Image (tube, rainbow, N blue to C red; front, side):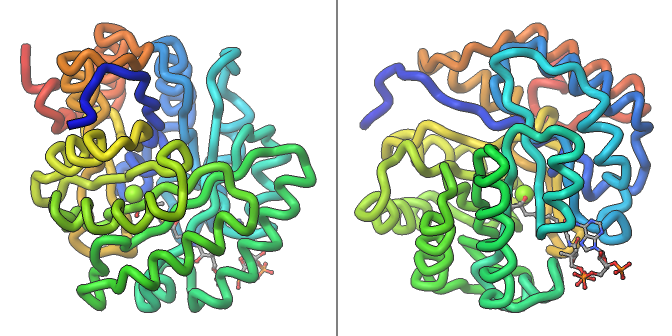
Length: 297
Ligand code: HMG
Ligand code: MG
């Protein structure tokens, strides 16, 4: 077991993945205030919004105002999802720190999510990554449907390896492997990571678990044991993808933090401050967050 205490990086994706699927529009001023609170918790990375087409993700139609409106805290990287050059132009105008490009490992999800085949998307992303790097930004890559597709079911590992390699060739700093519909189980995570770790160092890989079937934490533990130290999560267990039926909340940052703390892993995040920022969101939004931690009084 490689569970010796070490530094673990949490990529907070709540303001993006957490909000993108929500029917109730969280007011721009509340988004900004919430991100400002998250910035004070010790998190070093916040995916603040998404510069996709506003008609495709209405919940984040205010990406430009949000990214321009937040207070920048030194030591915190503010990232955003960017699908193409138009999105990059908007992200650069709003002074994004890191550009997160994304694609699916399965054709049908690719078509539904971004209206393009995988090969067409690779061309768009290559152009986008090149321009982002030329503008002095770092680039992160996401692969979706790594562990299963809502339209096709099983996804071949070769397809995942193919797009992962393409992302690294484009110069991405890190690839996040997405369990978009929360269908992965620990043995499958081990199989995928076995192959990935033959090709890439653990430091360049992240895991992005959704908790649809309650296995996100078990999968995280397995990945930690295999040497992965970077995880995407969303405060309160928010999250989902409107173009992946059945996708529900991300692994909850507050639940993840509880486990990591107990394992003696170092995150630099203050649990009480994180909880306060979750309460703030609950109050502004008028709804309860679903994480285990937020059910404890
Ligand atoms: P399209 O309709 O094919 O776009 O959508 P297009 O390139 O044909 O352009 C059509 C019009 O849209 C043009 O305007 C463009 O300028 C404009 P016109 O010339 O007609 O006036 N346009 C834009 N406007 C603003 N911002 C832009 C933009 N791009 C084009 N960025 C597109 C293609 C990719 C834009 C669309 O399909 C889209 O935005 N999809 C995003 C869907 C999405 O956000 N899904 C969820 C995120 S992925 C996810 O959640 C998974 C993840 O969490 C990991 C995991 O869980 O596995 C990351
Ligand atoms: Mg996701």
